[in-house]
Amino acid sequence: MCGICGELRFDNTAPEQQKIERMKEKLHKRGPDNGGSYFARPLAFGHRRLAIIDLTDRAAQPMTDEQSGIALVFNGTIYNYPDLRKELQDLGHSFKSTGDTEVILRCYIQWGENCIARLQGMFAFAIWDSNKQSLLLARDRCGIKPLYYSRSGQRLLFASNTQALLAADRDIDLAIDPTALHHLFTLHAVVPAPRTILNGIRKVKPAHYMLIDSSGKMQEKRYWSLKAKRPDREMTEQDWVRAVHDELRRAVEKRVKIADVPVGVLLSGGIDSSLLVGLLAEAGQKGLKTFSVGFEDAPEERGHEFEYSDAVAQKFATEHHQLMVPNNQVLPRLPEAFANMAEPMFGQDAVAFYLLSEAVSKEVKVVQSGQGADEVFGGYFWYPRMHHSITPGIRRFSDEYFDRDHEEYLETVASRFHVEDVTSQLIQDLLDEVEADEYLDRVLAVDVTTLIVDDPVKRVDNMTMAWGLEARVPFLDTQLVELAASMPPEMKLPNGGKHVLKELSRGFLPDIVVNRSKAYFPMPALKYVRGEFLSFMQEILLSDSATQRGLYNPAYVEKLLAAPEDYHTRLQGSKLWHLAALELWFQQNIKS
Image (cartoon, rainbow, N blue to C red; front, side, top):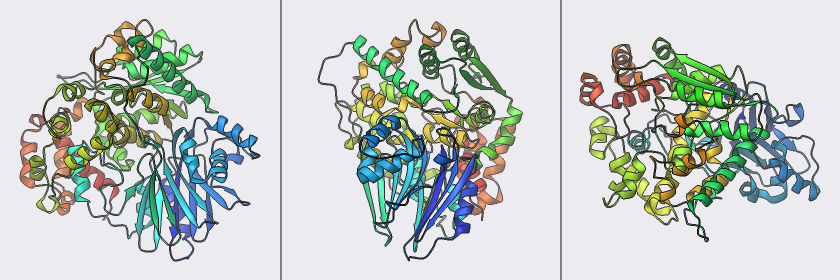
């Protein structure tokens, strides 16, 4: 796991070394072990390394092959690299290192851009082909690893986070993208690629790659699509349970085997992370470290789920670590967490993951996490509502999912940011693109390939990498995702959702975990806004910075401040927190 960056000039001048160094400094947390640079006019690469596989200098980056004129910077993990390495050796390739980075390099030398579809894992990488004078930027199928870029004038910059781009060039257009703003306030902070909240920064789409030549010509190509079609053969419930069990076990095992350092688990106490622990124990993993976090209770809601995580840790004899965060530690650390977000996030658990990652990074360098299970296996309450709804058109989706209808969005922001209902059109287009048997199949496919990319997946990446901690997400394994996409809704929706996961867990996990109702990561103080948390948000939204930015309609802000606990989204997020969170991100990351 690493941080990557680079610049391609379109005027045949040499990139500035200091620009690369500034970007590398902003990537240091993602790769605290060491760093390197590569300069070959008109291109430069920078890299910060978190050493996970092949800890020697032989696997250092940027990695080059002088004979072919190829250079590479890579962030992520390729889980099938041992098989690819053997195939390449059979084709006559020799290797100097034992890790996955050189396998990508050799794959490109052998198969060119077609190599990307052969890679299984989480990745974002850049390859410079000096013979073609062409830069390739690629991103994994589910967008687990980020890759941002900025094009203006005679150059293209790219990096693993927006902070690096902003440090590199003061000429980036910092104006707010009105379309992205509409997406952000409608889809609980999700801004689907290629957009970001800033006009001057874009991101590579998941399951896509881009080719940029030295004259500035850009091409975008898709290398994978998720189809949601039933298998040719009839499958019983037990067939599905066995198939999911086998595929999930493989996904979990390869994410612990492909590492030269110990791997822990973020154990929330839900069925998803509990399954990861159980499957690792089943595979014979010894000395497994598990980690849980909790917060202070509110009168309406508990702030932790320790009784569930404790039961799992006890059953599988893990080395368990609990972190209880009092409210008086949350507010002081919120700005710090937001300074490490590549894009604004509204999820209440962002600071939780940030603080937990700080503690976990002192124990291990790699963890497995349960993100994606709800989206892949239909675990949220809005899925059955959509499945059974007879509401026509986009409202079948929006009535259950959107944070605000278009009319309220227009009430929320200043008139200069008013646009058409671009989010409804985007979601309808995405749903129409999916090759699927049923409506819910389309919804889950869009969720897995687009919506969770810029919500829980990005949140986990940003907050763990802020502490040099690699997070692996087995539920987003490509083979598992494809299997689940072919599964009919009756294998997902019954029993409160994630039916097939619950069935394979019976007699395997503690009953208290299997039989519990669906829970959401608890952080009551950011949901039931009162006391010092209300004062904190009020200070942000009424600050000189917010006033000068002029992002919001003042009447709407005053309405929310007058009764903050009366305004929640359909998914039970605080609308006041949404406004404060976006403004806080600007204050922490966009310096005037």
